[in-house]
Image 1 (cartoon, one colour):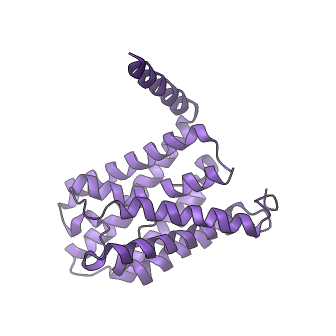
Image 2 (cartoon, rainbow, N blue to C red; image 1 turned 120 degrees about the horizontal axis):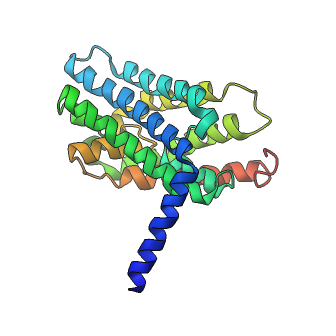
Image 3 (cartoon, rainbow, N blue to C red; image 1 turned 180 degrees about the vertical axis):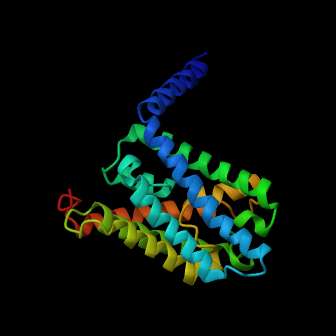
Length: 240
């Protein structure tokens, strides 16, 4: 009985949180849907077209869609589109705890919906753009995904949250970072840096090999950026 009451209480809390931030959560779902639809869609179309898009083209698509979404939706939800980013904003004190779970659920739902639509539209090609370690080397991908996400989150703090940064360039800086990292490390790890981006294709395509890497490594990398940027900004007091 106590366990049932506890579960009911959790469901009520989650429902309240979803209602309170429904517009932001919807924006996050739409943004993550667009990110996964465009990015993994480019991977799939590249396979179908015998490499017409190319790896650099795919990297450009990922970076460009992130930049466009930051400028288009950032003023509504903050443009996270990434559970690792949401958790980093929370632990650094820039995001309320009650919105964390609704955001992550919305991001995951957006990614899943995009992968379902791509499967129905293009078929099960290129593993639906799923992220997999090169030659199954999960240790290599684990380390690299930590580093990649650290760099991404560091740029997000520096360009998007630090009041000392030039105004209006966050979308460009973050989009370029995503594109750059996808370009030089995509062939090794898939350059996910985003648990939701990896989760959609994995769930819809049933591709779970070493999937845990793409949750734990990005979250650790983003939290490392919280620690380092906090040190550089006097516990974030200098940037608020």
